[in-house]
Length: 221
Image (cartoon, rainbow, N blue to C red; front, side, top):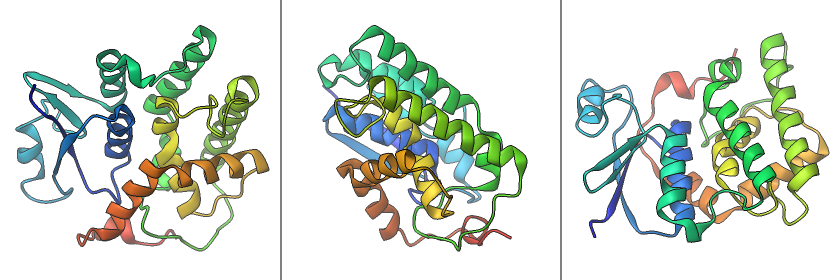
Protein backbone atom coordinates (compact mmCIF):
# COMPACT_ATOMS: atom_id res chain seq x y z
CA UNK A 1 0.00 0.00 0.00
CA UNK A 2 1.33 3.43 -0.93
CA UNK A 3 2.44 5.61 1.94
CA UNK A 4 0.09 8.44 2.87
CA UNK A 5 1.17 11.98 1.99
CA UNK A 6 -0.02 15.16 3.67
CA UNK A 7 0.61 18.49 1.97
CA UNK A 8 0.81 21.38 4.42
CA UNK A 9 2.07 24.96 4.71
CA UNK A 10 4.30 26.64 7.31
CA UNK A 11 3.79 25.03 10.71
CA UNK A 12 4.11 28.35 12.49
CA UNK A 13 1.25 29.98 10.61
CA UNK A 14 -1.06 27.42 9.00
CA UNK A 15 -3.83 26.53 11.43
CA UNK A 16 -5.67 24.39 8.88
CA UNK A 17 -2.52 22.43 8.13
CA UNK A 18 -2.14 21.80 11.84
CA UNK A 19 -5.66 20.38 12.05
CA UNK A 20 -5.12 17.94 9.20
CA UNK A 21 -1.70 16.95 10.50
CA UNK A 22 -3.00 16.29 14.02
CA UNK A 23 -5.83 14.18 12.62
CA UNK A 24 -3.39 12.07 10.62
CA UNK A 25 -0.97 11.73 13.54
CA UNK A 26 -3.82 10.46 15.70
CA UNK A 27 -4.23 7.43 13.42
CA UNK A 28 -0.69 6.25 14.20
CA UNK A 29 -0.10 5.61 10.49
CA UNK A 30 3.24 6.61 8.93
CA UNK A 31 3.08 9.39 6.36
CA UNK A 32 5.23 11.79 4.38
CA UNK A 33 4.97 15.58 4.66
CA UNK A 34 5.16 17.95 1.73
CA UNK A 35 5.62 21.51 3.01
CA UNK A 36 4.76 24.36 0.65
CA UNK A 37 5.55 27.76 2.22
CA UNK A 38 2.89 30.45 2.06
CA UNK A 39 3.12 33.78 0.24
CA UNK A 40 5.70 32.83 -2.36
CA UNK A 41 5.31 33.49 -6.10
CA UNK A 42 4.91 29.78 -6.82
CA UNK A 43 2.82 28.83 -3.76
CA UNK A 44 -0.50 28.52 -5.58
CA UNK A 45 1.02 26.68 -8.53
CA UNK A 46 2.72 24.16 -6.25
CA UNK A 47 -0.41 23.52 -4.18
CA UNK A 48 -2.49 23.01 -7.33
CA UNK A 49 -0.33 20.01 -8.16
CA UNK A 50 -1.98 18.30 -5.20
CA UNK A 51 -5.21 20.14 -4.39
CA UNK A 52 -7.92 21.40 -6.79
CA UNK A 53 -8.90 24.01 -4.20
CA UNK A 54 -5.38 25.52 -4.25
CA UNK A 55 -5.43 25.32 -0.47
CA UNK A 56 -3.77 23.17 2.16
CA UNK A 57 -3.92 20.74 3.78
CA UNK A 58 -4.57 17.97 1.30
CA UNK A 59 -4.26 14.26 2.00
CA UNK A 60 -3.00 12.01 -0.79
CA UNK A 61 -3.83 8.32 -0.39
CA UNK A 62 -2.90 6.64 -3.66
CA UNK A 63 -5.41 7.91 -6.21
CA UNK A 64 -7.56 9.53 -3.49
CA UNK A 65 -7.10 13.21 -2.69
CA UNK A 66 -8.95 14.78 0.21
CA UNK A 67 -8.78 18.49 0.89
CA UNK A 68 -10.30 20.51 3.75
CA UNK A 69 -9.27 19.58 7.29
CA UNK A 70 -12.64 18.31 8.46
CA UNK A 71 -13.06 16.12 5.37
CA UNK A 72 -9.57 14.72 5.99
CA UNK A 73 -10.58 13.88 9.55
CA UNK A 74 -13.76 12.12 8.41
CA UNK A 75 -11.87 10.13 5.77
CA UNK A 76 -9.28 9.02 8.30
CA UNK A 77 -11.97 8.08 10.83
CA UNK A 78 -13.55 5.78 8.24
CA UNK A 79 -10.29 4.35 6.93
CA UNK A 80 -8.77 3.71 10.37
CA UNK A 81 -11.68 2.88 12.71
CA UNK A 82 -9.34 1.36 15.30
CA UNK A 83 -7.92 4.84 15.90
CA UNK A 84 -11.28 5.92 17.38
CA UNK A 85 -10.95 9.46 16.10
CA UNK A 86 -14.53 10.36 17.10
CA UNK A 87 -16.20 9.61 20.45
CA UNK A 88 -17.88 6.21 20.46
CA UNK A 89 -21.10 7.23 22.22
CA UNK A 90 -23.63 8.59 19.69
CA UNK A 91 -24.59 11.73 21.63
CA UNK A 92 -20.98 12.64 22.29
CA UNK A 93 -20.08 11.95 18.67
CA UNK A 94 -22.89 14.19 17.44
CA UNK A 95 -21.69 17.04 19.65
CA UNK A 96 -18.07 16.49 18.61
CA UNK A 97 -19.05 16.75 14.95
CA UNK A 98 -21.17 19.83 15.58
CA UNK A 99 -18.48 21.77 17.44
CA UNK A 100 -15.86 20.74 14.87
CA UNK A 101 -18.08 21.92 12.01
CA UNK A 102 -18.72 25.20 13.83
CA UNK A 103 -14.97 25.70 14.14
CA UNK A 104 -14.49 24.86 10.47
CA UNK A 105 -17.10 27.35 9.28
CA UNK A 106 -17.02 30.15 11.83
CA UNK A 107 -15.08 32.44 14.13
CA UNK A 108 -13.95 34.79 11.38
CA UNK A 109 -13.23 37.74 13.74
CA UNK A 110 -10.88 35.49 15.74
CA UNK A 111 -9.10 34.31 12.60
CA UNK A 112 -8.82 37.83 11.23
CA UNK A 113 -7.70 39.53 14.45
CA UNK A 114 -5.50 36.79 15.90
CA UNK A 115 -3.66 35.00 13.08
CA UNK A 116 -1.78 31.94 14.24
CA UNK A 117 1.90 32.15 15.01
CA UNK A 118 2.78 29.40 17.46
CA UNK A 119 6.40 30.55 17.74
CA UNK A 120 5.68 33.74 19.67
CA UNK A 121 3.85 35.19 22.66
CA UNK A 122 2.69 38.79 22.44
CA UNK A 123 2.07 41.24 25.27
CA UNK A 124 -1.45 40.85 26.63
CA UNK A 125 -3.88 43.52 25.45
CA UNK A 126 -7.52 44.28 26.32
CA UNK A 127 -10.09 42.66 24.02
CA UNK A 128 -11.86 45.73 22.61
CA UNK A 129 -13.46 44.27 19.47
CA UNK A 130 -16.98 43.08 20.43
CA UNK A 131 -17.05 40.50 17.64
CA UNK A 132 -13.74 39.04 18.79
CA UNK A 133 -14.96 39.02 22.40
CA UNK A 134 -18.09 37.17 21.25
CA UNK A 135 -15.99 34.56 19.44
CA UNK A 136 -13.84 33.98 22.52
CA UNK A 137 -16.90 33.68 24.76
CA UNK A 138 -18.54 31.23 22.37
CA UNK A 139 -15.43 29.06 22.20
CA UNK A 140 -15.09 28.98 25.97
CA UNK A 141 -18.77 28.05 26.27
CA UNK A 142 -18.35 25.24 23.72
CA UNK A 143 -15.34 23.84 25.53
CA UNK A 144 -17.05 24.03 28.92
CA UNK A 145 -20.17 22.30 27.58
CA UNK A 146 -18.18 19.45 26.06
CA UNK A 147 -16.10 19.01 29.19
CA UNK A 148 -19.14 19.12 31.50
CA UNK A 149 -21.23 16.68 29.48
CA UNK A 150 -18.64 14.23 28.17
CA UNK A 151 -15.21 15.09 29.56
CA UNK A 152 -15.12 13.05 32.74
CA UNK A 153 -12.86 10.36 31.26
CA UNK A 154 -9.82 12.57 30.69
CA UNK A 155 -8.56 16.14 30.18
CA UNK A 156 -9.84 16.66 26.62
CA UNK A 157 -13.18 17.86 25.28
CA UNK A 158 -14.65 14.36 25.28
CA UNK A 159 -12.39 12.84 27.89
CA UNK A 160 -9.98 11.12 25.56
CA UNK A 161 -8.34 12.97 22.66
CA UNK A 162 -10.48 13.13 19.47
CA UNK A 163 -10.77 15.00 16.19
CA UNK A 164 -12.61 17.78 18.04
CA UNK A 165 -9.41 18.50 19.96
CA UNK A 166 -7.43 18.51 16.71
CA UNK A 167 -9.86 21.06 15.30
CA UNK A 168 -9.51 23.39 18.28
CA UNK A 169 -5.77 22.97 18.96
CA UNK A 170 -4.85 26.00 16.77
CA UNK A 171 -7.30 28.10 18.80
CA UNK A 172 -5.48 27.04 21.95
CA UNK A 173 -2.29 28.25 20.32
CA UNK A 174 -3.93 31.56 19.42
CA UNK A 175 -5.20 32.09 22.98
CA UNK A 176 -1.65 31.45 24.22
CA UNK A 177 0.04 33.64 21.61
CA UNK A 178 -2.20 36.61 22.39
CA UNK A 179 -2.49 35.87 26.14
CA UNK A 180 -6.28 35.87 26.07
CA UNK A 181 -7.74 35.98 29.61
CA UNK A 182 -9.69 32.75 30.12
CA UNK A 183 -11.60 30.82 32.77
CA UNK A 184 -10.04 28.13 34.93
CA UNK A 185 -11.84 25.44 32.89
CA UNK A 186 -10.41 26.83 29.67
CA UNK A 187 -6.92 27.18 31.14
CA UNK A 188 -6.94 23.54 32.24
CA UNK A 189 -8.03 22.39 28.80
CA UNK A 190 -5.37 24.54 27.13
CA UNK A 191 -2.72 23.03 29.39
CA UNK A 192 -3.79 19.53 28.35
CA UNK A 193 -3.65 20.41 24.65
CA UNK A 194 -0.20 21.99 24.93
CA UNK A 195 1.01 18.88 26.74
CA UNK A 196 -0.27 16.47 24.09
CA UNK A 197 2.77 14.93 22.33
CA UNK A 198 1.42 15.56 18.83
CA UNK A 199 0.76 19.23 19.56
CA UNK A 200 4.20 19.58 21.13
CA UNK A 201 5.76 17.95 18.07
CA UNK A 202 3.97 20.38 15.74
CA UNK A 203 5.08 23.40 17.77
CA UNK A 204 8.66 22.10 17.86
CA UNK A 205 8.53 21.84 14.07
CA UNK A 206 7.28 25.42 13.88
CA UNK A 207 10.11 26.58 16.12
CA UNK A 208 12.62 24.90 13.83
CA UNK A 209 11.37 26.65 10.69
CA UNK A 210 13.65 29.32 9.27
CA UNK A 211 11.10 30.99 6.98
CA UNK A 212 9.57 34.18 8.37
CA UNK A 213 6.63 36.04 6.80
CA UNK A 214 6.39 39.63 8.00
CA UNK A 215 2.61 39.93 8.05
CA UNK A 216 2.35 36.95 10.40
CA UNK A 217 5.23 38.09 12.61
CA UNK A 218 4.06 41.64 13.33
CA UNK A 219 2.78 42.23 16.85
CA UNK A 220 -0.88 43.35 17.06
CA UNK A 221 -1.60 47.05 17.23
